Image (cartoon, rainbow, N blue to C red; front, top):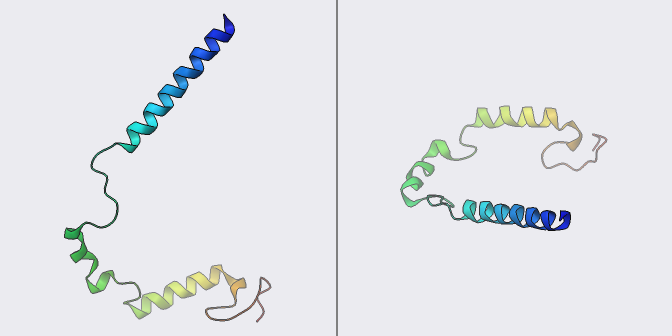
Length: 83
């Protein structure tokens, strides 16, 4: 009796998991990538990375302050922080 109960429970759990997985994959309305009508917004100059020199310098300062062992951009160096 116990083994039959365990088998039926396992089958029920497997079936529910499979249904949830396939149901999640079959949702409509999910789009992958950029739609054609959204491309005009991404083509604006303010959406381009690195268009503001002051912001880029600030971002670099924050990044290299956190990653002090890298040795800076374009430099070699190991984890010790020396070049």
